[in-house]
Amino acid sequence: MIDQYATAQRGPTPTGPTSPCRGSRLPVRADAVKFLVLVVVFVCAACGLVYELELVALGSYLIGDSVTQASVVLSVMVFAMGIGSLLAKRLRTRAAVGFGLVESVLALVGGMSALALYASFAWLGESRGAIVAFSLAIGVLTGAEIPLLMTLIQRVSRQDAGAAVADLFAADYVGALVGGLAFPFLLLPWLGQLTAAMVTGGVNVVAGGALVLWLFGRDLSPRARWLLLTANVVVLAVLAVAAATVGDFERAARSAVYGPGVRVAVHTSSQEIVLTGGARGPLDLYLDGRLRVSGRDEYRYDEGLVHPAMAGPHARVLILGGGDGLAAREALTYRDVASVTVVDIDGEVEHLAREDPALSALNAHAYRDPRLHAVVGDAFTWLRRAVRTGGDGRFDVIVSDLPNPGITSSAKLYSQEFYGLAARALAPGGRLVVHGASPAADPRAFWTVDATVRAAGFRTAPYRVPGPADGFASGPDRTKRVGRDTARQDWGFLLAARGGTAPVPRLAADAPKLRSLDPAGLRADALAAARARPRWAAGLPPSTLVHPRYGE
Image (cartoon, rainbow, N blue to C red):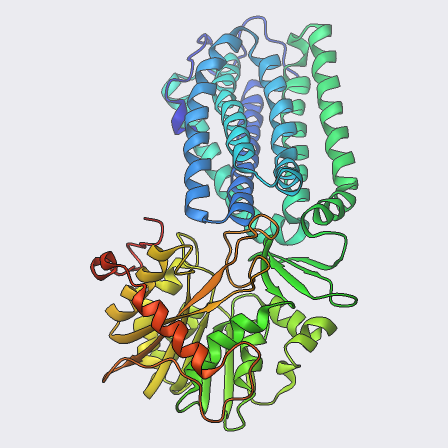
């Protein structure tokens, strides 16, 4: 963090090796003061990194595209830190009171940032501007810290600027390490996004206030002491009240986003899961505020995804994603299916699919079927292990039921390497079916998926399934929010097989009676998708782990 502070101010040079500057009145020895200042640098660095990670995580959850959000937050904050270090020049003559006020404002802004971003998302439907504003404000305040602390530390000990900067660097970097590890492993799972930010703000203001009011309080005027004390008490009170009422706030925000019918709301390490309806109306499942499953139309998506791949050998089925159990429901309708393996990264989705009355009823209690084997884990990692060890054998059908491709954590699940692993996991004559983006709404992404699958050695056949005519279609699309897009959507799929001719999307002879698919309609939709292939699609490069193409 403080590599942005190479221009930190040198301040006056003391005359004794460990003696305070003339005029300083310290409650402890100068070497102890220096140590305590470095402790505060450590704490402030940890808090600053937590604020930074909060913004990145919330940006990814609320907006999507984690790479873009991380790039925006980090670049804006680093730029703002440079501005803050320059502005700190004006506070050099009053470094103690300036640092105290900076920490009070930083604790308030950083501690309330997560709540403000969530409120912006819930009631305004947009949080990009808020993320940039908070990144800028936190960066400016963080950038002012080290120059002021450098001035304070040089007031109490004889130390040249190079040695002082080295000490500050060391304390800052170690603090950043602790804050970076505490956020995902301690704060986020124990406290959640909102409360974690508030607790961090409380630690921040206490550390900054204690340093100034105790160690340097004798050098402050009575007015300055009361100003800092009042500011710290007010910030702590605001954070305490916000933390005490965060539950009510979350319920109100969820009602604003999802309506009044929220039954289940769970934060996991991967996402926020919300279930609405189900008792008196259609069930809706949201992941990070995006509609993933709607009881009104989910059968259209799941029937279109699974059944064309079942027209052939289908004794062993692998479903990557699909923790809601709906794709498994469709596969289990075939009597000659011997096993269905579901690999989903979020065990809480599987738990709800198994235990929630409405969701388990919607998936026809698929998790009670002894043929179904559920695995919690990353699909890429699990598939690579299965291919290397051969312990899970080969599959007749692999169903890729994953979030839409994009420059996010899901990009690797739409890469050439991933499909290469899938090819090795398929039995001879097996088929892979992939949910891609909508060929009408996002043709470049859809045909990039096609190019990537073909680059892994598959022959492909595109097809589409129309969504409902009366509004937004549910499905693994993490880029749109319910109620924000009412245009008719369609789903794009790719049926793939190795060797011979390209597979033909059709229904198996023993397929059950379906509500949305019939042989003639599927044939027509497959023909329409093939004819809609644009000329430029032939030149699209595949997406790889080191060069994801979906954001181009």
